[in-house]
Length: 208
Image (cartoon, rainbow, N blue to C red; front, side, top):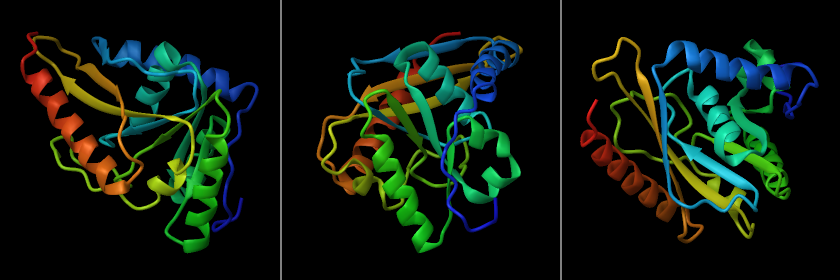
Protein backbone atom coordinates (compact mmCIF):
# COMPACT_ATOMS: atom_id res chain seq x y z
CA UNK A 1 0.00 0.00 0.00
CA UNK A 2 1.86 3.05 -1.21
CA UNK A 3 1.21 6.44 0.33
CA UNK A 4 -1.13 8.46 -1.86
CA UNK A 5 -3.25 5.53 -3.06
CA UNK A 6 -6.87 5.52 -1.98
CA UNK A 7 -7.44 2.56 0.35
CA UNK A 8 -10.84 0.90 0.20
CA UNK A 9 -12.27 -0.83 3.26
CA UNK A 10 -11.93 -4.56 3.77
CA UNK A 11 -13.72 -6.90 6.16
CA UNK A 12 -11.26 -9.71 6.77
CA UNK A 13 -13.00 -13.00 7.65
CA UNK A 14 -10.95 -13.30 10.86
CA UNK A 15 -9.86 -9.77 11.80
CA UNK A 16 -13.31 -8.14 11.48
CA UNK A 17 -15.09 -10.56 13.87
CA UNK A 18 -12.08 -10.36 16.19
CA UNK A 19 -12.37 -6.56 16.25
CA UNK A 20 -16.02 -6.88 17.24
CA UNK A 21 -15.13 -9.30 20.04
CA UNK A 22 -12.12 -7.20 21.10
CA UNK A 23 -14.32 -4.09 21.29
CA UNK A 24 -16.66 -5.74 23.79
CA UNK A 25 -13.79 -7.05 25.91
CA UNK A 26 -11.85 -3.76 26.00
CA UNK A 27 -14.87 -1.65 26.87
CA UNK A 28 -15.84 -4.09 29.62
CA UNK A 29 -12.31 -3.93 31.07
CA UNK A 30 -11.59 -0.21 30.76
CA UNK A 31 -14.96 1.37 31.57
CA UNK A 32 -17.31 1.11 34.51
CA UNK A 33 -20.43 1.12 32.34
CA UNK A 34 -21.89 2.22 29.01
CA UNK A 35 -25.17 4.11 29.03
CA UNK A 36 -26.86 4.76 25.70
CA UNK A 37 -29.74 7.21 25.46
CA UNK A 38 -31.44 7.29 22.08
CA UNK A 39 -34.51 8.50 20.30
CA UNK A 40 -36.21 6.53 17.52
CA UNK A 41 -33.77 5.63 14.73
CA UNK A 42 -34.83 4.15 11.41
CA UNK A 43 -32.50 1.16 11.01
CA UNK A 44 -34.23 -0.01 7.81
CA UNK A 45 -32.07 2.42 5.83
CA UNK A 46 -28.29 2.75 5.46
CA UNK A 47 -26.95 4.82 8.35
CA UNK A 48 -24.48 7.69 8.40
CA UNK A 49 -23.30 8.19 11.99
CA UNK A 50 -21.82 11.61 12.78
CA UNK A 51 -19.93 11.85 16.06
CA UNK A 52 -17.62 14.03 18.10
CA UNK A 53 -13.96 12.98 17.90
CA UNK A 54 -12.30 13.10 21.31
CA UNK A 55 -10.01 10.10 21.66
CA UNK A 56 -8.41 6.93 20.36
CA UNK A 57 -11.48 5.12 21.71
CA UNK A 58 -13.95 6.73 19.30
CA UNK A 59 -13.90 3.90 16.76
CA UNK A 60 -14.45 1.32 19.49
CA UNK A 61 -17.42 3.26 20.84
CA UNK A 62 -18.91 3.50 17.34
CA UNK A 63 -18.51 -0.25 16.90
CA UNK A 64 -20.13 -0.80 20.30
CA UNK A 65 -23.11 1.32 19.22
CA UNK A 66 -23.34 -0.73 16.05
CA UNK A 67 -23.20 -4.06 17.86
CA UNK A 68 -25.79 -3.09 20.46
CA UNK A 69 -28.26 -1.01 18.43
CA UNK A 70 -27.66 -0.38 14.74
CA UNK A 71 -26.44 -3.85 13.68
CA UNK A 72 -24.99 -2.95 10.28
CA UNK A 73 -21.84 -3.70 8.31
CA UNK A 74 -19.30 -1.28 9.75
CA UNK A 75 -17.36 1.29 7.68
CA UNK A 76 -15.39 4.31 8.81
CA UNK A 77 -13.27 7.05 7.28
CA UNK A 78 -9.72 7.35 8.66
CA UNK A 79 -6.81 9.62 7.77
CA UNK A 80 -4.46 7.87 5.37
CA UNK A 81 -1.39 8.35 7.58
CA UNK A 82 -3.07 6.65 10.53
CA UNK A 83 -4.54 3.91 8.37
CA UNK A 84 -1.11 3.09 6.95
CA UNK A 85 0.32 3.04 10.47
CA UNK A 86 -2.47 0.86 11.87
CA UNK A 87 -3.22 -1.42 8.91
CA UNK A 88 -5.37 -3.57 11.19
CA UNK A 89 -8.15 -1.00 10.84
CA UNK A 90 -8.21 -1.31 7.03
CA UNK A 91 -9.30 -4.93 7.59
CA UNK A 92 -12.17 -3.89 9.88
CA UNK A 93 -13.99 -1.42 7.60
CA UNK A 94 -11.60 1.54 7.56
CA UNK A 95 -10.88 3.45 4.35
CA UNK A 96 -8.57 6.38 3.74
CA UNK A 97 -8.79 10.10 3.29
CA UNK A 98 -6.06 12.76 3.05
CA UNK A 99 -5.85 16.41 2.05
CA UNK A 100 -5.20 15.84 -1.65
CA UNK A 101 -8.12 16.91 -3.82
CA UNK A 102 -8.24 13.67 -5.85
CA UNK A 103 -8.13 11.59 -2.69
CA UNK A 104 -10.96 13.60 -1.10
CA UNK A 105 -13.13 13.05 -4.19
CA UNK A 106 -12.38 9.31 -4.10
CA UNK A 107 -13.31 9.17 -0.41
CA UNK A 108 -16.57 11.06 -0.96
CA UNK A 109 -17.56 8.89 -3.92
CA UNK A 110 -16.69 5.72 -2.02
CA UNK A 111 -18.68 6.93 1.01
CA UNK A 112 -21.68 7.54 -1.24
CA UNK A 113 -21.44 4.03 -2.67
CA UNK A 114 -21.38 2.55 0.85
CA UNK A 115 -24.63 4.34 1.66
CA UNK A 116 -26.39 2.76 -1.30
CA UNK A 117 -26.69 -0.47 0.68
CA UNK A 118 -29.27 -0.58 3.49
CA UNK A 119 -27.12 -3.06 5.42
CA UNK A 120 -24.24 -0.60 5.83
CA UNK A 121 -23.21 1.89 8.50
CA UNK A 122 -20.70 4.65 7.76
CA UNK A 123 -19.06 6.53 10.65
CA UNK A 124 -17.48 9.94 10.07
CA UNK A 125 -16.02 12.60 12.34
CA UNK A 126 -16.85 15.81 10.45
CA UNK A 127 -14.49 18.07 12.37
CA UNK A 128 -11.71 15.99 10.78
CA UNK A 129 -9.40 15.64 13.79
CA UNK A 130 -9.36 14.71 17.45
CA UNK A 131 -10.45 17.63 19.64
CA UNK A 132 -10.50 18.28 23.37
CA UNK A 133 -13.23 16.53 25.29
CA UNK A 134 -14.24 20.00 26.52
CA UNK A 135 -14.90 21.42 23.08
CA UNK A 136 -18.56 22.40 22.73
CA UNK A 137 -18.67 24.06 19.30
CA UNK A 138 -18.02 22.04 16.15
CA UNK A 139 -17.13 23.23 12.66
CA UNK A 140 -17.73 20.63 9.96
CA UNK A 141 -15.40 20.21 7.03
CA UNK A 142 -16.98 20.26 3.59
CA UNK A 143 -18.02 17.04 1.92
CA UNK A 144 -20.80 15.72 4.16
CA UNK A 145 -23.54 17.27 2.08
CA UNK A 146 -22.11 15.58 -1.02
CA UNK A 147 -22.18 12.21 0.74
CA UNK A 148 -25.81 12.44 1.82
CA UNK A 149 -27.18 14.40 -1.14
CA UNK A 150 -30.19 12.68 -2.74
CA UNK A 151 -29.71 9.55 -0.66
CA UNK A 152 -32.43 7.84 1.36
CA UNK A 153 -30.45 7.32 4.56
CA UNK A 154 -30.75 7.73 8.29
CA UNK A 155 -28.40 10.51 9.42
CA UNK A 156 -27.70 9.89 13.09
CA UNK A 157 -25.97 12.23 15.54
CA UNK A 158 -23.84 10.77 18.33
CA UNK A 159 -22.40 12.57 21.35
CA UNK A 160 -19.90 10.53 23.38
CA UNK A 161 -19.37 11.85 26.91
CA UNK A 162 -17.35 10.58 29.86
CA UNK A 163 -18.02 10.88 33.60
CA UNK A 164 -16.47 9.17 36.62
CA UNK A 165 -18.83 10.14 39.46
CA UNK A 166 -17.75 7.97 42.42
CA UNK A 167 -16.16 5.16 40.39
CA UNK A 168 -12.50 4.41 39.72
CA UNK A 169 -13.19 3.79 36.04
CA UNK A 170 -15.00 6.23 33.76
CA UNK A 171 -18.42 5.52 32.34
CA UNK A 172 -19.35 6.27 28.74
CA UNK A 173 -22.59 8.13 28.11
CA UNK A 174 -23.70 7.99 24.49
CA UNK A 175 -26.53 10.15 23.18
CA UNK A 176 -28.07 9.27 19.81
CA UNK A 177 -30.62 11.14 17.73
CA UNK A 178 -31.69 10.95 14.09
CA UNK A 179 -31.47 14.19 12.15
CA UNK A 180 -34.61 15.20 10.26
CA UNK A 181 -33.61 18.50 8.62
CA UNK A 182 -32.31 19.67 5.25
CA UNK A 183 -29.20 18.14 3.65
CA UNK A 184 -27.29 21.40 3.90
CA UNK A 185 -23.88 21.51 5.56
CA UNK A 186 -24.58 24.61 7.66
CA UNK A 187 -27.97 23.29 8.74
CA UNK A 188 -26.47 19.93 9.72
CA UNK A 189 -23.63 21.66 11.57
CA UNK A 190 -26.08 23.92 13.41
CA UNK A 191 -28.33 20.98 14.30
CA UNK A 192 -25.41 18.90 15.57
CA UNK A 193 -24.16 21.72 17.78
CA UNK A 194 -27.65 22.12 19.24
CA UNK A 195 -27.92 18.37 19.78
CA UNK A 196 -24.51 18.30 21.49
CA UNK A 197 -25.39 21.17 23.81
CA UNK A 198 -28.63 19.43 24.78
CA UNK A 199 -26.68 16.23 25.45
CA UNK A 200 -24.29 18.12 27.75
CA UNK A 201 -27.27 19.66 29.54
CA UNK A 202 -28.81 16.23 30.12
CA UNK A 203 -25.47 14.90 31.33
CA UNK A 204 -24.99 17.66 33.92
CA UNK A 205 -28.30 16.65 35.51
CA UNK A 206 -27.27 13.05 35.96
CA UNK A 207 -26.40 11.68 39.37
CA UNK A 208 -23.64 9.19 40.00
